[in-house]
Image (cartoon, rainbow, N blue to C red; front, side, top):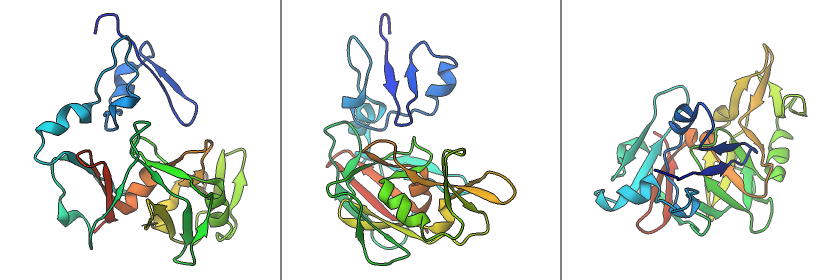
Length: 234
């Protein structure tokens, strides 16, 4: 667009400008699946990809089927019920800031009693974020249950022995608990004995439930009634 520009700031502190290189490679991962309030194109704000296409879909929604060590898929216009077990839970989202945002103020570890992290805490579902960035109280309580886990400043977050048994984590998604399997929280090896956690403390007040969350859950984004659906993967 002649004379247009954009600038995006990310939760981890990065900034992307229209003049950045390699811009085409970077943009390949940004699908525009949130709401148009987030669009930063100037001087005339533009609609996101999803806002542009949703009226032409059979249903105004898309789903994210992302899996650990396997091919995943985005699907537009329908919910494939063969991809998950049980009933899908639907919760309302707050689109004021352009995110798929919901209240998430409680958590539990290995199916234990729910605990409150921060009253009124908010989270967003974001496939563009690799890790699960939760309230610091969640990360600290979780890794307190993992033998050998430490908050390693040199590595930039919580690490643990690779042979540690990681408990499941339950997170409040709009008032209903969703489970993240412990096996999905083992993100990557640092060395032969140490692994880096996929659950880390959010550096900002807003929690970001990224791909670690999606590995355990099939998620649907309904832009027709502004709801988020989730269910356990098959």
